[in-house]
Image 1 (cartoon, rainbow, N blue to C red):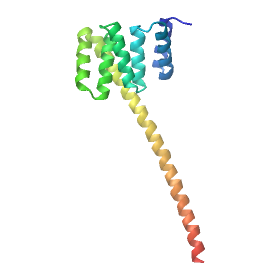
Image 2: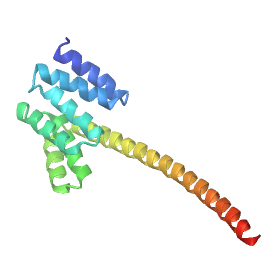
Image 3: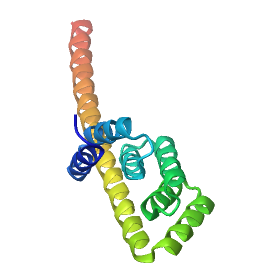
Image 4: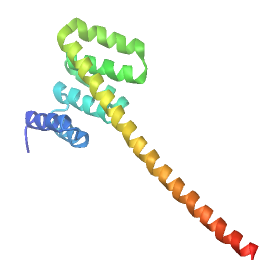
Length: 159
């Protein structure tokens, strides 16, 4: 069994390798050892955000802020999630709070989180495009098969 810091370090490595599922597991292991660790809560919030579990991410960020009210990463991460949900008022509120705590860190984290979110959306889009291509191929095969059947059936009736 590792320490909280060991699990967090592993989670960060996994998150940076886009192995979001394992990152979530590692953060949860850290939180089993210390349920109120703000770094683990903030990291889990980020990983859940990456996986699209926005409500769970909000919950983690709020818990992190309860444990460490001046956590600029948790505050800006919460803003990013609200922004993704289209909640401009809450996003603006959290961004202002984060910027008032540490302007440079907040700007960097917001840009980083937005970039990761955009990359996730691009990956999702590529997955959909791939699926659309597969479906178009299935449709083409179906249409070809239906046309072949129709030709064969028509030949029987023309005899």
